[in-house]
Length: 281
Image 1 (cartoon, rainbow, N blue to C red):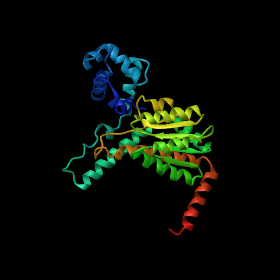
Image 2 (tube, rainbow, N blue to C red):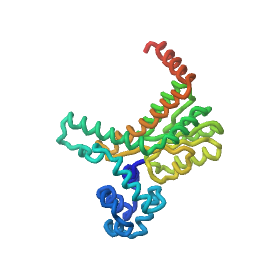
Image 3 (cartoon, rainbow, N blue to C red):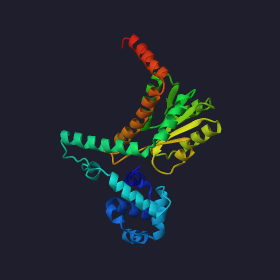
Image 4 (tube, helix red, strand yellow):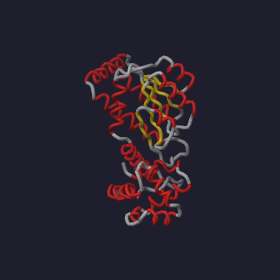
């Protein structure tokens, strides 16, 4: 996973010193190649201990490993990522809006793919494959993603349901147990009530899959399998357009992997489609 993508994903949750180091790293990665931790601290106007803590927050043991990650990220960085299209403006015609949206969605999907390790996706697929029942809990824009995923999983014969109302979610959770899955989708990962649902699920032996933003949060820390969505500045404030693209990418990846894992599941899709066609709708 690219260091730069990690930093961008964590950017909103960083402290003042960490933000200085994040900005310096993103804007001057070439300089870090030849800097010591003391020189980096001085250049970013922070303490040397802040440099070490920043490296550890990003998942590295210390500055040397962080520095290696900077070099590796520079080698991976593509021209498309280093020169993205600018933000949307009122002067943009529909052609330019289309180009910018396509560019931003491509970047979002690329970052989402890199943030989510294949092993975590595989473990989530295995959990869903063996589940007796699957309960999705999500609110707002995330609930639309969850409902779409439930529709696709039902085609595969998975007994899945989605609840956006937390009281109904608690009722549904009360009948789950070992062999069942709670799938929580919440990009912000802030609602305390969602964390409580996860805690209750764990007490009942329910397997928990979380999809949240890439940062330390109670929901992902409690989850058995952790997935991460990505967001950037939205073209329409609070619209969730780009975040939803990231979330849809993850659930579609899971559905495809689940379908490919078992021929019986593919036959269930054909059966479900046959039932739908018989309605003549």
